[in-house]
Length: 216
Image (cartoon, rainbow, N blue to C red; front, side, top):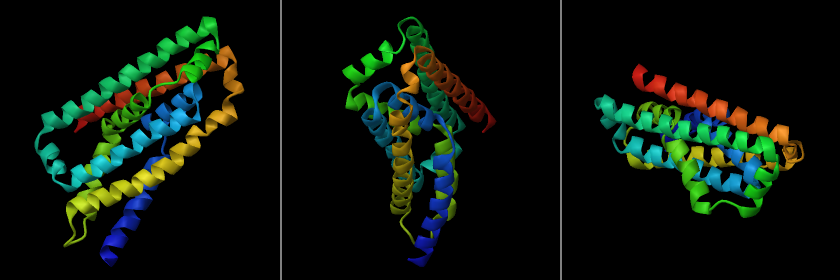
């Protein structure tokens, strides 16, 4: 039990650093909250934090070995993630172009019409599951921390839940930035800048994903 708790404490410290490090997940949640409100940001966050639980179980049940033994499969997953990030980046750039002539009306319409819970949740989940940074973290850390005699699947699931809790706290705070910055982004120029910055960041993460795939 002590070994398990010690490993969990080490993992929690590593996960906390990973959670607060800006990434595609953070950009997605912030952009969603700015466009569609705090509730939409939190729903997206819930999808994001489901990802670590899935990765934890996968790492604890042998997926790490499968991916390490099949470079083509590893690359396929990462390139799929890069493609999805590219799609999100293009969506941001298109929104920036649309926001230029009509101003904040685009974002206001987004808030009033809303986006389906399923779409928000699945977007957050896919962004996390296809994030090479998260995958590499779990596939390398979980096997090394697994205490002797412990169930690898249970350990992976528990570690995923730890990161999910930390991530939900952080991303909920990010979503709450909607209230702080709403007036600022009510200006058409500011709304356009938000979309351009989000698109540029997502495009950069896409490039990182591609480089990770061929650097493995």
